[in-house]
Length: 299
Ligand SMILES: Nc1ncnc2c1ncn2[C@@H]1O[C@H](COP(=O)(O)OP(=O)(O)OP(=O)(O)O)[C@@H](O)[C@H]1O
Image 1 (tube, rainbow, N blue to C red):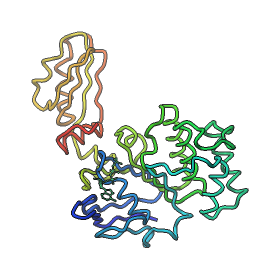
Image 2: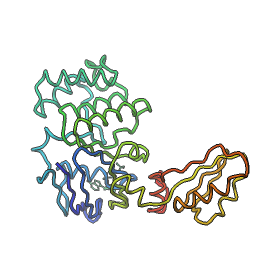
Image 3: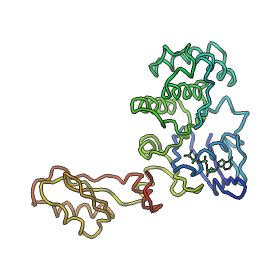
Image 4: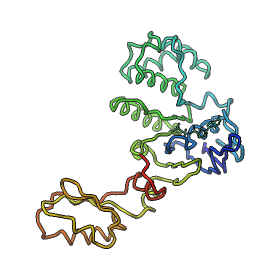
């Protein structure tokens, strides 16, 4: 059930929101969409869901255009959360579950399990409007997954959540993947994507600036980070050829180097100069890659 976006363009009048986007999202993958406000993430999701028609290009899921016929196989957490504030959690979920072909008792047993898991079983008979924003988001997540979809689309699932709830939701997303669900999600936060995704796409003004597997993107970038914490002045390291960025920190410095060989030179240069508490070679962060590719800081 690979999801394929083949040269997708979406124009609103003369404005191009998504521009020639081609991607393959493998089955059972967690795929991350990153991009600033207005980059085209939600528009792309709406096209995948069949809620918007691409101006050009084609989207296929297992060879067919995804759409209304697949509603029992697809789960969606929209960015503009769509719960009915006056309904109780139970009535809301029964309604939404039945829309997706579930029986009432099936909904209730799944709902009990999810509420237990999210540590809010006491809210089952509360109206949605009585819940905090974070708890409403958990209910919205449950409504997206209760029918065990094969494809799950989450638009900014972690926004507005405290760190404990972010962790809870991340674990739920990972469990959905273990159960065989393909998950596509968007975020403004690089670290969420780095932590969860095997594949990703960074959109800028509707165009993919970076896409592919996270490992490969990092490998292709080549540059790495070196952390040096030492009890002597390390400022001289910035003059070593191949050091592309130097940042002083209270314990020493953090450098970006052109390749691993430069880190060996740095290691030789600091040997014998005094006490080195930390010497570490790290993969570049997605933010490093974004800055290099787009020429601006993302966050
Ligand atoms: N129905 C519409 N009519 C006209 N323009 C639209 C419409 N929907 C989206 N746009 C425009 O398309 C661009 C992309 O919007 P989209 O919501 O896809 O971005 P996004 O990456 O999801 O942003 P955010 O992170 O803010 O949610 C924006 O400039 C937006 O104003």
